[in-house]
Amino acid sequence: MWLAPAFFATALLYASVGFGGGSTYSALLSLAGFSFILLPIVSLCCNVVVVTGNSIRFARAGVTPWRRALLLSLIAAPLAYLGGLTRISEATFLILLAISLIGAGLALLLPRPEEKEGEASRAARWMPLAAAPLGYLAGLTGIGGGIFLAPLLHFTRWAGARAIAATTSLFILINSLAGLYGQLSKNGAGTFGLALSGALPLLVAVVLGGQLGSLLALRFLPERTIRWLTAALTIWAGSKLLWDQLA
Image (cartoon, rainbow, N blue to C red):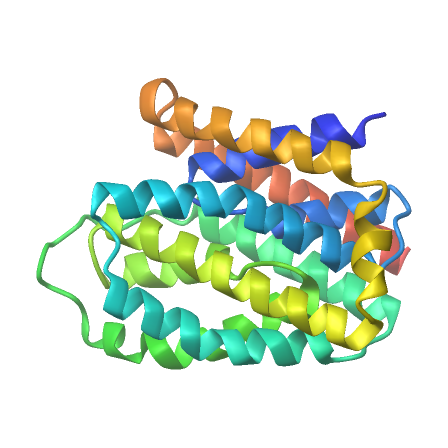
């Protein structure tokens, strides 16, 4: 009963800051006792549903830096596929997921430097190298990886805030698709229908939450407030998951 509202709230918060929410979907599914084999498939599908709308909106607004965004995404995508193919134990998967959630939440709390248009730091040129391990982590744990990429892009002044949000959405979309393909290649195409057979209410919840999140971000809540709420949800889910595994 509580899972669909939790997915709705997660999509609302994550979409409002340009992310998909895959990491938290995975944690919520685990806490609900969902099979860890099917869990990444549902999470990655929810990711795709949420960030597709964001990517289309950014593309229509003309703020997506296509060449640079595609470079990062396409470097990461093969690694996301390999991550999806990698077989790991349930305990290892859940501990990695919990640590990823806590790290992502802490990254959201870090202050963002003031934009200095045209003054990218020297570290910005190394972002394609950072994209590769993020892609692998995305496929392995059923997340998009954008929640880690965005802070790096901000801290290196890789681009302006809107261009970074657009890049992050595209990165999540491509890597979620690649990771999903890897998961299905590993466990068989039949797991797709099996995973989604009981997940339709969750997909509907993330569609509605994602749309409302975009509206809130544009018209009502300040970005800092949304980021803090998202960080609190992410850190709580990761800490609960880690506690359950270590207890």
